[in-house]
Image 1 (cartoon, rainbow, N blue to C red):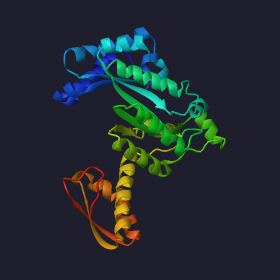
Image 2: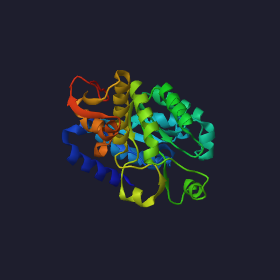
Image 3: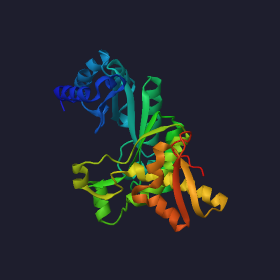
Length: 297
């Protein structure tokens, strides 16, 4: 990517977003932005900053490695209109980080997070589930340690194995078996509710679908609507708690937020079918006063 490419991307966004650009950030993702050669990094920032300086965009968001953040870098980012910094923490377990050759430690994540906060940036943290050597328990502890850092946003990426990688090699040798999408839903639904209860916004759950991803993946947890699967699981679990507490059977009217009807019903009516197996004939009604995952009868 060049500075000219930044201009082209921003102009496309302006045509698409219109006046909404004033609340939007220009984002640099797909690599460790602060680890690239500094003059190159500044040329990209300079191309984006003029749109922030003019008030066309709110700011600039970027992602990077926890060990590629220091005071000098953060000072430069602040000078060039950066508003949000996301760190690819992936795990807060040093054994998992070492096994996956991440090249940084959990302490690097903590140190970088504190510095990012000190310099006034919005903090985002990214974690992965089902990495080589990890477990549900370790992933939950990672989420708990991330929550202690009070990030503004979190992204959760269940591991997807890509061709020609070390994980692919381990996978083909039978030494590593990542969870598939169906197996990952339970854990990720728990993590989604965990962060929601903490008031931390999960802005991404699962990888964005693309032809290149589908062509390159060899295993792991990918589904084009993975977040929807997790949110539907949360709704089902809430309904099951009510059924168990009330000893319910037969026809039951469940009230949910108008925006959560599809979440409650589930993909291909999966939740309705699960309730039917328990002898519940579910009728779905709406109540605008209810929250995103709330269910009542």
